[in-house]
Length: 297
Image 1 (cartoon, rainbow, N blue to C red):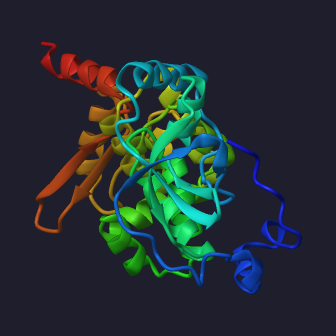
Image 2 (cartoon, rainbow, N blue to C red):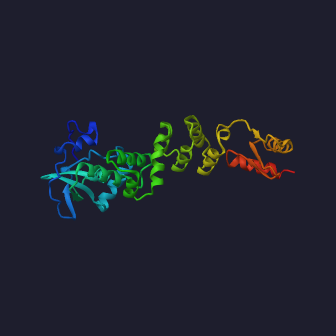
Image 3 (tube, helix red, strand yellow):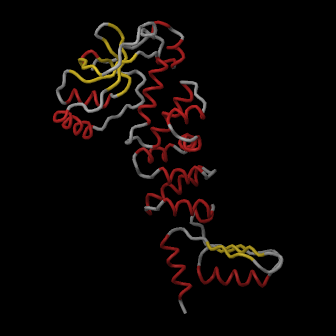
């Protein structure tokens, strides 16, 4: 697959610069070819300049190449016709790279006519639908669709087959500190962990919890509980007690519970004498320790 020639004044200034120049959309006046799959020479295919994926795992690529040697390319790639014996990849770069490794000279392809903006949108949407993308890659693709294809969130949700809340949750990941985003990309924490940390306002607290998730191998449920419990549980502060300002007898009972269990205890008492005792814990082990304390005679 030949390298994509650099277009002067194009990609460096963003998609809008490309769309302002009719010369960059050389298929806009062509007639769409008949549908169906064609076997085209790989040597005639250029890379897609809008390809959102830049990293391809070598081992996985070789595994796909081995499969292609045996079974061929099961899912055709998609290209657009640039001119006589010249095509540009819209989607399927991983399959194309693996086919080159497998020694193939031709590859099955759907041939389309698309302008530059259509190409970017199709490449991003096809990329998002891959099962092996991490949450940050999905979020970045959503962001590009919003910014470079001028889509609104409702339109974007419809294009990718998700509800708006799901799309927004992915986009919010990009507000997390860089260290956490890298951790998500590397699989150190899951999307569930990330969604819990998004709901924290303080960046330092987000980083503290992120490192704790890794060190203690915290589950998503435990992480959500820590975020909900608040800052004192998150930062592993010394256990404290919070009572009332009008019922010393209730406060005495609450302080005794706190002393015996050694964990944060909050007391919410109503005017008529009823109320709630809220006991906070950091993880499943601490919860079990509390239960053992309660069972002691």
